[in-house]
Image: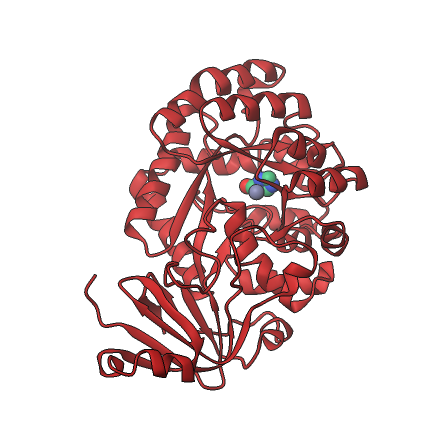
Length: 419
Ligand code: IZC
Ligand code: ZN
């Protein structure tokens, strides 16, 4: 890249979230590293300098004429948001199930009747790679428009090797061709396929003996995730699958205690998962174990709202010393949204996180949940130049004016991609 440097000046507030790459806990989640009249110099896709406008004017006195200047007066500037839990690559949609749930059916009833994840799996199997790419790229465009510059993306709408590989290859191509960085997770253990009903252990064997080695062999995933839930995979099965993934170098993640308390939080700590997801029904003991193990709680308040469930106990988790991240859970069933700003609003409203904690949960801690903290998640020298300028004057206003997209400009690897 030999583009002109970009120089952001006079940000009313620059939230750097600078200071190390460890996940933030407790009071650390309130430290935004704020700079008033903030300034950032980006060049060759990287952040080269961060400080007050006066500091950078001194440092770049001789090169001032080279840069494209962005006046951020009256605006908040933050790192690009990071969504650490999505099912962004899928075929079709499930709007009829939304209507069915409003008429009284539950998420699990729909799934057990062959809908839900099984319905998306059918539509994903039918879609060509090109169709999956196009449909998913549009969702990534929407993420970007909402200030999200990095997402994690799971497979799990195949539950057969061919379709799982197809989803992961599409994810790889999206990562290469779309501005948003996409970090891939294998989630063959998303549901037990309908033709394995009563033969669940056989499916677990298939996952361990055939699917995991093939996915890892092609280098198509970084993480291995399991839907550990009553009626899906038991804690014992989940443990086997996650331990087997580790042998192939895949780091465990786990959908835990979403619908019923099931020991998922405890299991996450036990297997050394990088993060545990959902946790609506996590036990006190599970929360304590996660705090002791340093497992990141990846909380999904939009899903709770969409399923009309009580949100996870985000406040209690932070107070117990668990590092908390937040995510959309973008998926066609329980959370068809790409709005991380809405998720931050809901982190405050339904989980009593503070505006500052919500921002850390959507940036640095989210980066840590997908092992991307060395590259993204804060505004610091040497990191990727992934930045958002918001049409609000401070971070409190970002969380307070809710349900609205305040994004004004987005830069990805130093290139303006929105605004
Ligand atoms: O497609 O319903 N919870 N997996 C576990 C999901 C929601 C995604 C879906
Ligand atoms: Zn999920």
